[in-house]
Length: 388
Ligand SMILES: Cc1cc2nc3c(=O)[nH]c(=O)nc-3n(C[C@H](O)[C@H](O)[C@H](O)COP(=O)(O)OP(=O)(O)OC[C@H]3O[C@@H](n4cnc5c(N)ncnc54)[C@H](O)[C@@H]3O)c2cc1C
Image (tube, rainbow, N blue to C red; front, side, top):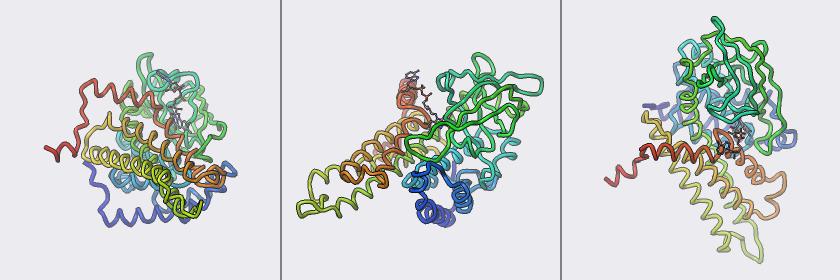
């Protein structure tokens, strides 16, 4: 059961973060898009001072310990503006939260207080160039006395330029996946950038190489072979975070479209008075409303201490489809000007596309949801409780 922050403290924190987003970060968006670089000297202090790095770090470690019902609207606000900054905040918070659930007391004491302030950060290293995701890994961690020795490659790892630690998934035997924490400066561990991405500009998603990287056995998270379970636990809530990002992007695209439809006049009338345009707007609003409802349900269940294995994949999948439709219609409403580089709907359209990939492709979301449902999982919800 997660109660989160008392309402008055939450209102102040949310106000501080939202003000930072619109007053300090949003004005940087055009520069980031042009240079494909995030000015860390401005962005990181701004995020630190408003508290964005400690949002879901437990209070015992210096964070705010927000409930998911409190966190999702704040994350969603980040997705209304520049996507690279949203990616940094998402990965930082998501894996600080994961560590708070799966890490040992020693690991939490060492890393979490620094993540709450933003001095430390944990990146998530699963994806590999030569293999599939999940159990199909080629990175190995071999036990050698009191150490593990890691060899392999990872790529597309967000925050690889700023993370102090990496949660690395590796095979400790041919059948077993384990999770280990690797500090950035460990000998044999090298990081290099990958080419810039289609959207979410400026955030870095690097390639990691491990050549006989030696870490103490206490770097293991949980027991050997528990990596797959940790992965599923971490991704379960992180997929909901991607859906919240979809909601933020879709909400902004709808807001911009509503405004534009009332201002743009053709043939003597605002286009918003034409039935064809009204239909686009209504369809966009339906997607936003439905996604918001699914997110509220998922957050309430998680905050009540329930697992949400099917809901997380279903809301992540619905969210990316919804934001895809909404940003597409936003372009239709805006006509040609929406397609130009400096227009926010052009950026939102590109930024949203990452939601298809982060925390797994649509294929995996269908697979997870169907597997749970065939296995007997039911997503009974508040709606049924009221009806009963
Ligand atoms: C900007 C960005 C940031 C990222 N950040 C991170 C990060 O921080 N940490 C991290 O670990 N990863 C990260 N990723 C990686 C991301 O999670 C993966 O790209 C995504 O999960 C897809 O994996 P893949 O690229 O290996 O594609 P592949 O697995 O090669 O998939 C290619 C296609 O084949 C399909 N496919 C693959 N296997 C199967 C199968 N068995 N059955 C049916 N269909 C299949 C997929 O659905 C997809 O359509 C990031 C990616 C991007 C683009």
